[in-house]
Image 1 (cartoon, rainbow, N blue to C red):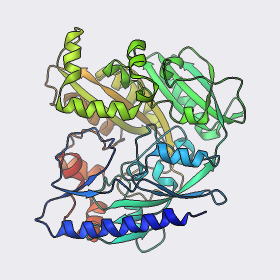
Image 2: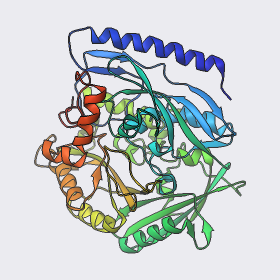
Image 3: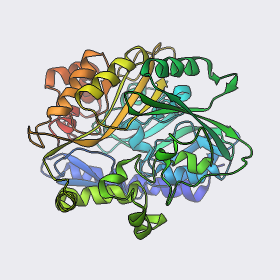
Image 4: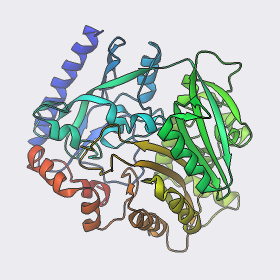
Length: 460
C-alpha cells in the first residue's frame, strides 16, 4: 500500500511547484515551459523564457496489488514505472514503446502499444489526476467530479491546459514471459482482415492473444506479431545488444522473450531508427555497448544533431548526402481504410518499414474531447520515422503535407508530437477547438500557457 515517505515527498514537491508557478506569474508575461529530463517531441520549438522545474516529479508513490492501482508522478518514465510494477507481477494496461516516455506525457500527448486493441490508449487506463493549473492551484480530476471536463480534456492537450503532477493508473497481472508468433502476408487486404478478426475475437486459431502489432516492410511483405503471456519459456531471445528485434520478424515464425524484454523490444533500436546513426551495425553496437543502445542515447544524439549536423556530415562521408525531409509521424485511420492508407502512403512517400498497431475505445462513448474517435470503430495506428530525399527543401513540409492530406481524405487523425502543417481552420476543426476554447477559458483564462495551435503548429 502507500509508502508514507513517498507520499510526503510528493506533497512537499507539490507545495514547492505551486509556489514557483505563482512566482512565475508575477514576471513579465511570457509563456511558461517545463524544465524536465526527457522529451519525446519531434518538432522544433522556441524555448520558453519562464521554466517550471518539474524534474523531481519522477517517483512511483505506491502500488496497490490488491486493487490493481498505482500512484505515480507525472515525470516518471515508463522504464521506472515498469520496473516498479513488474516487481509485483503487474504492468500498466498500456506501455508505450520507448523507455524515456513519461507517464504524464503519454496522457497529455497520447500513447499506444500492442495491448491497445484491448485496453485503448494510455489515458484510458487513468483513474484520476492531480493537475497544476496556470494560476498555481492543483486540482484533483476524476471522471465524475467537478473537474471531469479537464480530466477528459487533458489527453492531446500537450500541457496547454495544465501540468499533470500525479496520476492514479490501472494495472493488470503480467506473466514472466511472452510467446510471439509472426504471421506473414503478401497482401495488405488479407493482413488487415486477419487483424480485424483477431481484435474482434481476441483469439487466433482458437488460442488467446494478449498483444498485437505489425510491420510492413513493403507492399507485398507484411507481418502481424501476436503475443501471449506465458508462465514458462523453452528459451528466450535477446535483442538488447548484437541482435536486432525487427530483423527477427521476417526470419522467425515463433519466438520467446521475457516480459521485460518484450515491453522494450522496440527501444534498443528505436524501432529501426538506429540505422540513422549507424547503430544497427555490429561494430558500432560493440563500440556503444549494451547500456548505450536505446531511446535515451538516440534522443540525445538527435538533440545534438539539431545543433551540430553530425549525421549529414557522416552521410556525406559515406556517399549518402543530399537534401532530405524528416517525415516522423503517427496517424490513425479506421480498419476499413487501413489498406487504402498504406497503399497510398507507399506510393506517395514510400518509407520502409512502417509500424502499425490496432486500438479501440474501451468505452461505449468517447468522452475525450480533443482527439475525436468513433468508439464503435477499430483503428489502426501507422508509425513511420525516417527522411525522404527531396528537391523541395528540407523544411518545406512537402511530404509531411502529403501525409496530412491523405489522413484528411480518409477521415483519420494525426498525433501532434511531431511537425504539423495544417492551416488554422483545418487544425481547429480536426481537434475540436470549440471544446478546447471552452477548456482554455475555464482553466487558463489569462493565456499564461500557449494555445494548442500555437504550440503544435506555430512551433512555440
